[in-house]
Length: 218
Image 1 (spheres, one colour):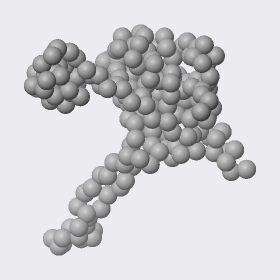
Image 2: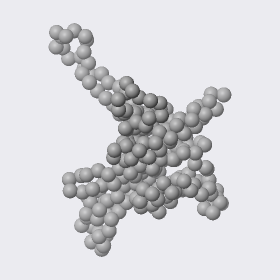
Image 3: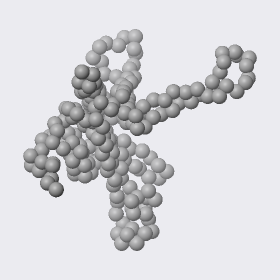
Image 4: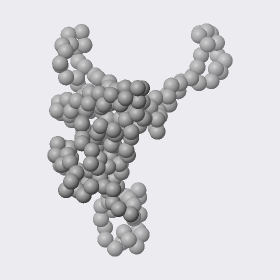
């Protein structure tokens, strides 16, 4: 069967995307390879690289999310690292493979989402002194949530009938929100540039999703 993918030398260089991955310093060769394979021969209209560090007991875990939007798709890449003694590592501690050499592990995955599948792009901003806010002033914090129907968040609360004296059980009420990818950045923790880059990517993604919706409606 002939190979339908163009050779790597014939693909777009995606220089800005690769440079952003390299600046993150998080296994750049591994992350870049996975994302470039997913993007393929298409051009990249916008990208976002976000690294998140969490503390679990006495361990530090790192996770990087790479988002890239092309004329037809959204690429979402996720990479996690595991220590050699991490029970969640691909090679469990104590196994013959682990005993042969204590090494760190990383897993990377990419998901390709057609633009017409994206159902929501939500941008939440936190600003200081809103009464005196001036257009163009960057927010303190931005939360970008993208949904395409694979993962949803369900928020529940006890239902009521409106009678403050009623103590009957009315069950629960709630809302389901698409929550496939959520990225939170703040000027204090991530820097003002990260906030600006997140807003720029959100605008680029919104533009191409809108254009894709208009094409499908014709």
